Length: 293
Image (tube, rainbow, N blue to C red; front, side):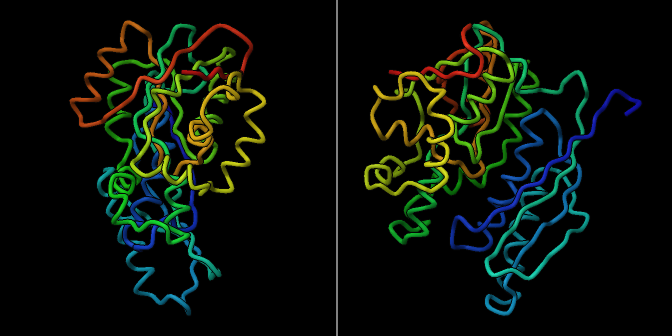
């Protein structure tokens, strides 16, 4: 754009991860908005993307899903400008989102630097918790922290990362922390170290891992990414599961210069974001991850 701004576009949708349709709509919308926040952009417009078995679930359920999504879009300061729906055997919902960023403020996953410190803005474990909900091992009422975390926008974390001036960012979604960290390391041509003892987990997530309630996506992440991870054989199995757990509406992984770490942590804390300092960037083979305690 002529004024030094750039358009950023993203699209994401998925099947329900909770039973309540309104909450599902909120989570799906927050997840869709996250890609915009991850690059430091501000959402402007959104379009609904819907697959729905109208004859089986009825219009009332669809209306609640759309209401939940609309609430999150309003909270983000954006506007829903339309959308598209198709008949489908299983509900699917998400958004196509357009955002705007100043080119000088754009944050990419390619600019992590040796010595940068890694900060994660949301706990992990939503994949295992969603699997437990689908399997009727847990109810949404038993995991309010995880539900609230998935509903929460990454808006404030994105605003703070721009103000502090982080080096790089990626949001943590379907590839899990392991995948997104490896992709950041490869894009930045270095390696990352993760202290798995510092990884935050939502309540009940590790309990579900111990029970073997691991989502299919976690196994795919293990198969694809663990060959690039040094030290995973020496950490507890539950920590490997947490690393590989595919996240729904996960947090941001921020890489920040060491002399700005304290400022970043303080501003995140002041905004009510309980972020965790989980590792650092190292020189070494591009795209590799070291894990340990």
